[in-house]
Image (cartoon, rainbow, N blue to C red; front, side, top):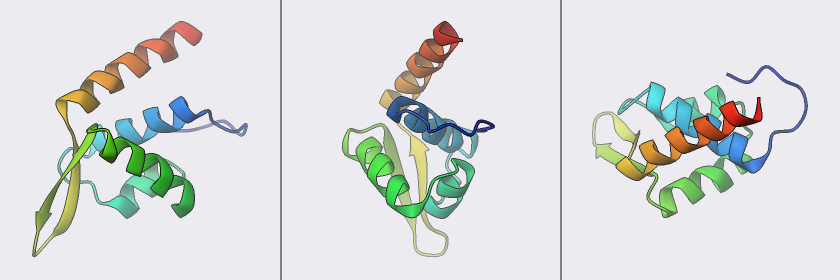
Length: 90
């Protein structure tokens, strides 16, 4: 997903997180999301908590499979808007 060396901006990190969650829709666990977005735990927690607190990412808990994450309608809308910004800046 990320192939550049320079630091990512906040919106780029949020975009990467949203892309990973969307890609693994309903099957995403925190560790997998963190790894696929190329974040350390501290940065992951900060940005992922923001997405959850503002209703962009929701979760389903299952006693056997644990907590899985998905994009809410708000999250899907944000993902689309950030993709449009990304296209405009390229």
